[in-house]
Amino acid sequence: MDAQQLLLNRHSNPRLSEPAPNAEQLQLILQAGLRAPDHAMLKPYEFVVAQQQGLNRLGDIFYAAASANGEQGQALARARLLPTRAPMVITVIAKVKAHPKVPALEQHITAGCALLQMQQMAQALGLGGIWRTGSYARDPLVRQALGVDGDDEIVGFLYLGTPQKSLTPSTPKAVSDYCRLL
Ligand SMILES: Cc1cc2nc3c(=O)[nH]c(=O)nc-3n(C[C@H](O)[C@H](O)[C@H](O)COP(=O)(O)O)c2cc1C
Image 1: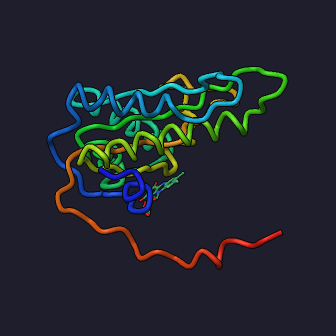
Image 2: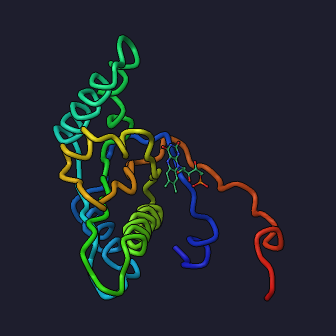
């Protein structure tokens, strides 16, 4: 896929089915993540890949969080099923390292860039993806279960799979609405 077209047409796809990225595609996706811009080369992230039983384990974590938050009935049952909306979910965690010149914010941004890089690679491979967060990304129980503490953050859950139907990106916006000259 042409690089300009990929960048101009990046889009999310919430309707994702099997197959998940295969082993070769997953390597490319993760390698793309590792190419995120990174002040002082701290590699301040961790990618937690879930598929098959891993999706169930992530669902169990969401379920436990929902239960601890007092959810009941359908809302509680839904929590467990959230990760199964795609055949693969990569949780991207910003793992913040102490550094005299690189504040936590910059490390969070690097992890976010890594997630975007992975989404772009998935699209380049003909796969689909969507970046999600929601309350579980900030939930104390989810954080603890995934080994996220201190300034670490779950920057997102990247849902990946095969698009059920191809989507076109939304119409381009006027650059002038978001840009000014100094
Ligand atoms: C940090 C972040 C968190 C997001 N969380 C969610 C989410 O929890 N649920 C959701 O439907 N979309 C979420 N989105 C938005 C989608 O990823 C997507 O960007 C949006 O639906 C617009 O579609 P597009 O990427 O095709 O332009 C999030 C985006 C970002 C950058």
